[in-house]
Image 1 (cartoon, rainbow, N blue to C red):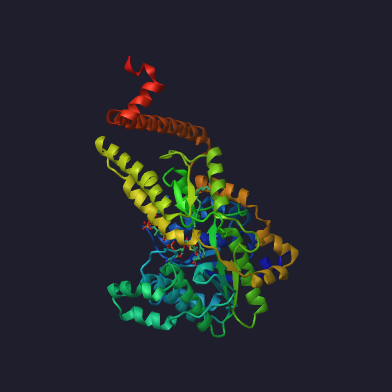
Image 2: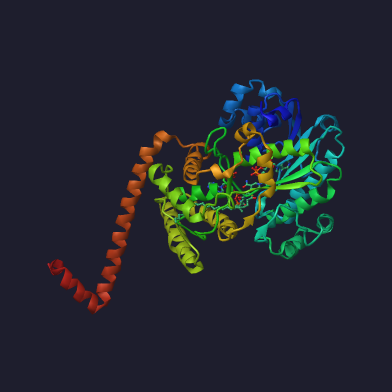
Length: 502
Ligand SMILES: CCCCCCCCCCCCCCCCCCCCCCCC(=O)SCCNC(=O)CCNC(=O)[C@H](O)C(C)(C)COP(=O)(O)OP(=O)(O)OC[C@H]1O[C@@H](n2cnc3c(N)ncnc32)[C@H](O)[C@@H]1OP(=O)(O)O
Ligand SMILES: NC(=O)C1=CN([C@@H]2O[C@H](COP(=O)(O)OP(=O)(O)OC[C@H]3O[C@@H](n4cnc5c(N)ncnc54)[C@H](OP(=O)(O)O)[C@@H]3O)[C@@H](O)[C@H]2O)C=CC1
C-alpha cells in the first residue's frame, strides 16, 4: 500500500480555500486515494446566496468528483463544512466548531487567499497575512496537530531573479504592516502602497511574501512547510486531463484569444513559461504533508513546485500550440477568427491595441447601437486589456527556482508513491498538456459541447468571408479616394485596368 495514503488513514484534515481551484483538486485527490481518512473539515463562507451545504453539494456534484463517488460513496459524510470568514478578526468560527477543530485536527492545508493582482493592500494583508497568523495561533492550540502546510506562490519573491527554497526577509516587518493597517485609512494606504510594495509588481505577490514571513516567524513549535507553485494550470492527468474551473492566469487569456478578442500580446516568446498543472501541485502538497508530519524536519522547509529548471517551456511555443488547437477545435461564437501574435515591442503592441483590439469593438458597438441594442464590447475589451496589463509582468521575464527540497522529497518516496503522488514534471509533454488544457477550457469552463465543433468551424468560415469582404471594400474606398486626388494613381489605374473608362 502507498505509504502516503496509509499516513492519511484515520486522519482529520483541515483545509482552507477548499472551494477554490486548488482546494477542490486537493480534496478530490485525498478522497480518491485515501478513502480511509476520517474527515475533511473545510472552512467555508456563505457566498452568492448559497449556504455552506449548497456550496458543498455543488462541489460534490461537479464532474471533478465523479470518480470519487465511485471509490468513496459516503464522501458527503466525510466532509464537514465549518462556517468561517477568514476576513473576520476571530475567523468567525463558532465556539462549538472551534472546540471540535482544536481537539480533532491532525493536519492543516492552508490554501485560502486572495489571488487578485489589483486587490486593495488592506484586503490582501487581511487575508494573505493576518488570516495566516490567526490560523497559526489556532494551530498552536491543537494537541494532535502533526503538520501545517502553507500554500504560497513561487512569485512571492519575483523581485529576485534566482530564488532559493528559503524565506527571504521582507523590507518591512509584517507586524509593522499589520499594525499600520489598523489605523491608516484607505486613501492613505492607496498612497503608500507603491512605496511599500517597492519592486513587487502587485499587492498579491507582496502580501504572499509577508504571509511566508509570518509562517517563518510565528510557527513556534509547529511542524510547518511552505509549498510554492508557479503558474497553476489545468489538470495534467488526474482525475482526468484538462480540468479547470476559473479564468485566472493563462485560462483567461486563452479564452480571450479563442473567442477572437485578443489578437496580440506584449510577451517574450523565449521567456520561460513556468506553468505547473494543478494535480502536480496537489501531489507535491500531499507528499509534503506526509513528510513534514512523519520526518519532522528540524526547520520549516520550502518546496518549489515549478517546471522551468527541469522541463522548460516557452511562451512562444505555448502560443503556437494554443493557436494550433483552435484550428482543430475552435471555441463557439467567436467574435473574430483566433489569430494572435507575441511582440516584445511596446509600439507594435500599442498599434495592435488600436487596430486589432479597439477598432473592431468600437465598430461593433456602433453597429449594436444602430440596431437598437446595448453596446457591450468596449467594456469587455477594457476588462481583457486590464487583465493583459496585469499579466504582462509575468510573460516578459524568466526566473530560476532551485528545487533541491522538492527533488529530495521525490527521492524519499517509494516507487508506488512516486507513481500515485507524481510531481515529476520531467514526464510532462507540453504540447499534449496544452492541447488538453485548451480542450478542458472549452468543455469544463465554457461548457461547450464537442458536437458543436462543425458549427463553430462554419462560423469561423463566415467570419473569414466577412473579413475578406470588409478588407476588399476598405481597399476599394481608399483607392477610389486616392484616384480622385492623385494623377499618378489615376495613370496607374488606367494602365492596369483599361476597362475603367467604359
Ligand atoms: C507565436 C504565436 C503567439 C500566439 C499567441 C496566443 C496567445 C494565447 C494565450 C497564451 C497564454 C499566455 C498566458 C499568460 C498568462 C500568464 C499568467 C501569469 C500569472 C502569474 C501569477 C502568479 C501565479 C499566482 O501565484 S496567483 C494566481 C493568478 N492570479 C490571477 O491570475 C488573478 C488575476 N486576475 C485579477 O487580478 C483580476 O481578475 C483582474 C484584475 C485581471 C480583472 O479584474 P476585474 O475586476 O476587471 O474582473 P473580475 O472581477 O476578475 O472578473 C469579472 C468577471 O469576468 C470574468 N472573466 C474575467 N476574465 C475573463 C475572460 N478572459 N473570459 C471570460 N470571462 C472572464 C470573471 O470570471 C468574472 O465573472 P463572474 O461571473 O463575475 O465571476
Ligand atoms: N492559481 C494559481 O495560479 C496559483 C495559486 N497559488 C496559491 O494557491 C492557493 C490557492 O489558490 P487558488 O485555488 O488558485 O485560488 P482561488 O481564488 O481559486 O481560491 C481561493 C480560496 O480562498 C477562499 N477564500 C477567499 N477569501 C476567503 C475568506 N474571507 N474566508 C474564507 N475563505 C476565503 C475562497 O473561498 P470562496 O470560494 O468563498 O471565495 C477560495 O476557496 C493560494 O494560496 C494561492 O496563493 C500559488 C500559485 C499560483
